Image 1 (tube, rainbow, N blue to C red):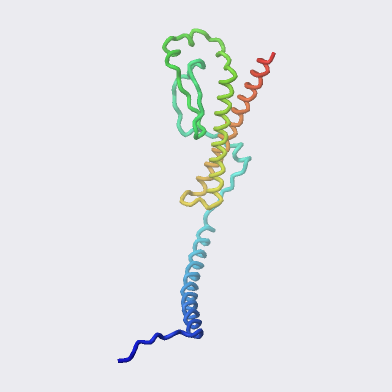
Image 2: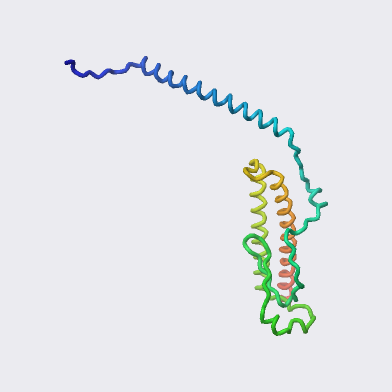
Amino acid sequence: MYPLREKKMNAKQIVSLISAVGLLTGLLYSQDLVELAKKEKERRAKAKDKKTVVITNADLKKKQVQPGIVVRRPAPVPEEEEATVTRSGSLRVTVNAQAAESGEAAKSPEKPPALTIPELEEKWRQANNAVGAATLKLNSLWQLYYSGGGMTPIERIQAEIGLTHLHLQELHKEADRLRKELDAAKSAEKK
């Protein structure tokens, strides 16, 4: 029998083996690129038929936004409710059951008692948190819009951006109003 010998590959053989693998990979990759180019061309041809809508700030100002859900109930008496802002930025109103049962709030049609400075500071902090949450939501919607929308249609994202922008403006107004009340209360306390 012949003794086993190890055969060493020389540099020429190694280079030719690597170049053969590279050549085959290049041929397979170029076929994929041709297929991708055809698919992209078809997608662009289909996209030309679609009508695109550009919404400007002027369009948003003209459009009156209607709420998605309308709840019909009598307006609560101001002394009976407590408003808090949730993490999502929505306003949650809770009714004080004791004041509603006693009927004291309904008997006195005077203006509600002024809030204390710590209460005003807390409401202002909550309003600022709501502004931050709405800003974050708006930024994520813009990011989704510029990335192509993924599975969500662009028109739906544009509409959501418009609604969120309007909601953010309302939250800014509320935060400014609370800040003015807080400043007025602090200046009145100093006197």
